[in-house]
Image (cartoon, rainbow, N blue to C red):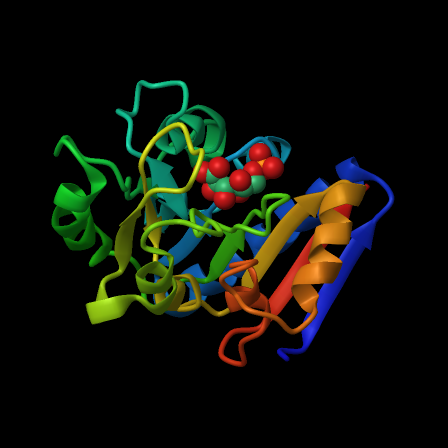
Length: 233
Ligand code: 6PG
């Protein structure tokens, strides 16, 4: 299994401070080395305080590309939109000039929209500087959900697709997700989780087992990209 760095905290505020500093440092290194930098970020309820801190960091944000790890197939003015979340919580303050490559477009379904999204993703820095991921209590990450209709294609990136339409059982909206190879095409992957339940789920995911049961295993049990886990109570 990949050697995984653990950054565990008793206090969430301290964790968010530490992670914001680390992301700013990594983006600064990317800008210094390549003149550009890239960051993949999750949606969901956890990263808000992190985005707030990161948006205040002094960087040449106009040369930073932000990409959501996944998206619900709703317009960017829909409350469920990850793009909306990012425009309201990360692309503000000093980070207002960052470039966001959104995954949604106005084709009727994510399957129909994949080609358009893939064209937009061709602009992603390769590799990204950091891929930041969340995890659900069912062991999903990005929109790689257990039991999802296209899970195998999405994890494998079948046909070299950078993104894949996916429908998770019980998910309110159809989704599009970055594929496994794209999520790992980064100098590092950081998994951001909080709470005792997710710590328990993480312990299960760190055990060997089918990634179909816990798709976050596709990130944890690989030897391509270094993985760090940030966790706090
Ligand atoms: C999304 C995210 C998803 C999220 C997990 C954890 O679009 O919802 O990309 O993968 O990171 O579901 O969500 P919470 O942070 O709300 O627990």
